[in-house]
Image 1 (cartoon, rainbow, N blue to C red):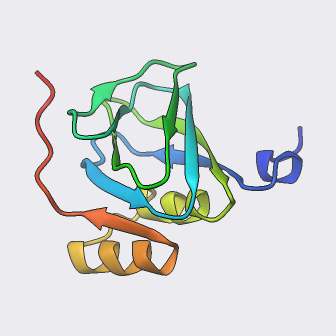
Image 2: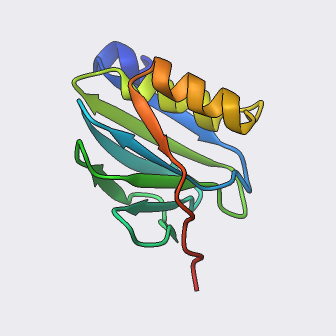
Length: 125
């Protein structure tokens, strides 16, 4: 099987370690589609709290709208597709191991066209 980015430019498969802390992101110049392949990561679009999404879930993150990604109780895999491409590669670097500290996270996001929104996230009930 070919890698997803060979078949669909602008696509990236992300491995999200269990317990990855939630961060809110913003892409001003691209839309992003996240598809949960395995696991149950916590995802949100807009101001709502992240909630667990089972395999097969699709989340559309429109440009200019905040969204968040967090690890669930087990590792997860997501396909991320950027339109136009770019933020999916940055997101893969931000959520994968090794974890980045706050300053490195903000700098890496900015280099890839994403912003880290530093407002607190509400907890999932």
